[in-house]
Image (cartoon, rainbow, N blue to C red; front, side, top):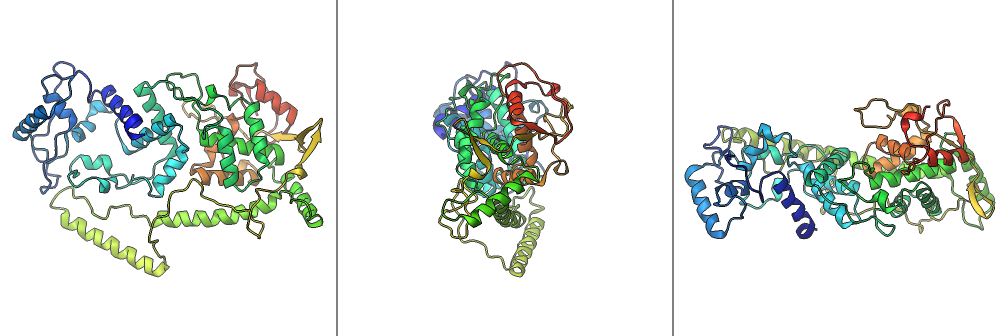
Amino acid sequence: MKDEILCNFWRRYLQKSQQAYCNRPAGEAIKVLSGCDSSTDVDSEPERPSLLHLLSLSESDGDLLTDCSFGSSIGKVSESTSVCSGSVDGSLHLMKNQKDKLRMSMPVTLSFCYLALLWLREPMTLSDLLRFVVEGHIPYLNVFQCFPEKMKLYGLDLKIFCVESWPVYEEVYNKMLQLAAFLELPRFPDITDSCFLHPDMLCMKYLMEANLPDELHNWTCRVVKKIHIGEADFLTFEPGNKSTRKVKYDVLAAAVIVVVLKLLFLLDDHYEWLLSDFAEERNKNNKEDGPYFEFKKWCKVIKSSLDVEQKKLDEERAKYLWRCEKPLFYSAKKKSKVLKRRQIVVNLQNQFGKLSGSVQPAEKPNPSSFQLNWSEENTDGSCFHGHSLKGILQEKCGLLTAINPDYWLCTVKLCTEKLCGHLAHYRELDFPQSYHFVLRLFSFLLRIQPSYIHEEVLSTPRTPHPASCATVTAKSSCCFSFARLLFFELHFISSDNFII
């Protein structure tokens, strides 16, 4: 991935941003810092000139430097330049004329990585990538601690690599779209049904992690096929085609599961409990056959496990060491003050650790694609993978259909603001608690806001193929028959014509 894909993306970025591998316009000069700034560390050592500066000193702007010219260029730089204020790249990074360009940052670095993963169709979604960052498996915060000894940060370079916030899904995804358009990348390799990023594959993964019955996978596959979101033309990333929908593969799979749960259980805080009571009575009276799926019992098991994992996550974030163990000094005058503050922080952390009785793990656990693990070997009945859906299904004309004939539209008011960028806004009070619980579960698994999944649920029933429009007027939270729902799936295009 690094040598064949990522390096080519990086070279293309340097060329498109006119930092390397290009012919510079005549008369363009490189601004070089000529002296040590008062805000820098006087103990810092001179840094190797950046590739940008060396290219500007070469005889031919379009050619790369050889070893001989590299040595002569270093001599020229050392004679005329002092880089105590940071690298030349660092100074150019903050120039006014660079604001309009896609400047490098830590979120853009993750966007580069995700583009390479997507090109290779690796079994890793964007939510997995960001979760590995939070868990510390991928260097992100205080990343300069992983640099070699000869790469010392000072001056303006500190502002580039000093990150004090976790990466946000929406920001990294949008940066990825901008980056792909900026690089003018071609159509990516097709996402077929055998790829991990296909909705059928991701739905299987999330159904296992959400501890839902295996039989639900047949229904997710039916929904994916019915609304044409499993086709390669819909799933494949094509940066140059603005008319195609840009797919968030993990969010789409979670939304498909939510739609299936609404089709089977309605999730209106009433019907799912009736089905659960029926399944509970049947399981008590008939223990010979496999158990029926109880939605109420599943909610209790998931809530208990979810609360434990959420508490553990909150504690880890609260105890996270945001500052690096070896603090950076912006100036020699502030060195003693920074060291003193750092010692106070360490002492307070040790004291709070003793009071709370927390013990730091000796080794970091290995990264895993699953956050919640369920085993059918457990005797406490906490695993629902093998449970049956017979209690909520009926056979008609040789096909299994849902007993539930209704489906409620999960929007109260569509967003009319053009600059908002969202189809609708999500408020917990406007929707049933069971629906919110399901959204909360998948928002924890994907580490995103429930509103993102809710918005994807709104757009999932819409087919990407052209068809005639349909206009419907009804009260909020009303029920529609399953037949009419399929009609909207096949004929609904524009949200402007859909009124609740």
